[in-house]
Length: 193
Image: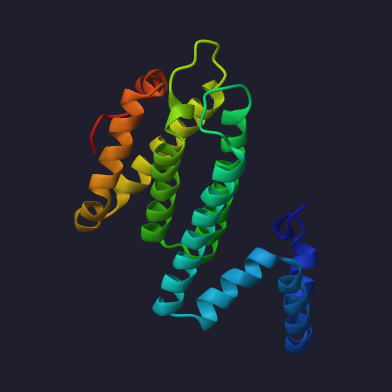
């Protein structure tokens, strides 16, 4: 139940002495890890810290691909695509948290595009069409990721889009040449950005 649904409680909280409200606020913030990170970023960090955060997530994604390369074979066989999809979802979670904390659209697009592009480059065989449909979930997932990236890309200023256009077009070209083609067409995704 939200506080807005209990107006008496809301009024009682607002009527508390400032010192009591401060104690409650600190206790509540301490229980929410994401809120704590958001406040730390908003109140104590600057542009250089944003770059450091973005680079830290980029390094984590590179490590993710190094680790995945050790245990996910680049062959279009049973379960390999599911293993890769698990890694990609984990990486997407890292980017989600980064964006939730910073609200930086540029680094979000950069990191999401890196995740898609690197998966295509490193695990290209897993994106080939499979006679038995073993990788359908992966192909559908990546097509949806590209659609999401395109939506974010289109909202960027034209000058900022220039920075990502080449890499995005390479990803789109790969997707349309791969087993992802039917999923890309079903989502109405272009061949070029």
